[in-house]
Image: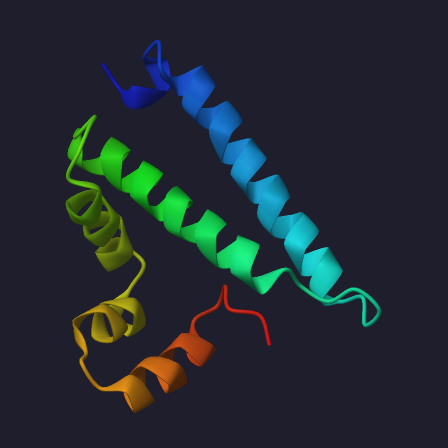
Length: 104
């Protein structure tokens, strides 16, 4: 059975919709010069979302949040993997600015 036909698909798809709406609202705020983006809340949200999708990806329901986060983070592509694996703070700053969800 495919995931799309499972009993979980509807609820996961609903959560996905909430997440996308949150990100779209934040981008809208970023484009308003009088308000600006809530960077800290966006960062926390994206971290939580990354762990959530990592849990679905790995099938780990509890604990091991770091494992789940890293599993999904790696799926985002090489620039993200490079940042995650780097110990160089200058690289971290430069690479994070080139990641598509980071707002300037």
